Image 1: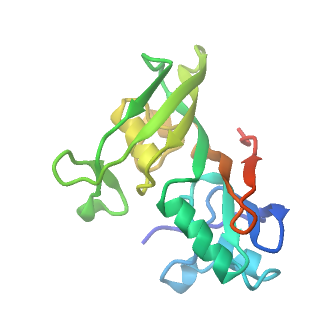
Image 2 (image 1 turned 45 degrees about the vertical axis):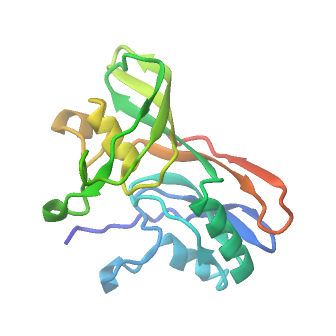
Length: 217
């Protein structure tokens, strides 16, 4: 059992129409309720106080902040889910990681599987893991702190994919309580991972939608 202390910060709605909502999820807030009563507080329940009809389409890790799309009716929910399952939605994240990456851009193609004795942690498993692909690009390197600001584009959507892939490269994300070494974990007061961009088609009109949200770090 973990010590869940949801933040006072409320999720902000940055876009709304008859079919969907785009919300900014605060770090350390669950996307959906957990199984135990003490894990009930979540982005979904907070937003349902004003928008009882909304349905979850995808999730962000509790410690990750940023853009999340929710459906406002069942037809839009089905069509948005279809875009996600067919990998037609482009998700982009910003992160700050330990060290200087050797290449300015590249890909991480390590299969992942749940580390059952230590769940919810995930591990790289070349034999039994599910395919997982992440593209990355270095935006900046800070020599004084020996950290890199990077852009991450997950092609697949495995649990903790970005966090495990960066650890596997030897560049864990700052503030990561599951995958970073002690020094890297204490370099930030939160996980420095933020869902900054969402690109997809409107479920009813087909219009191309592109949302950008700068990181709070």
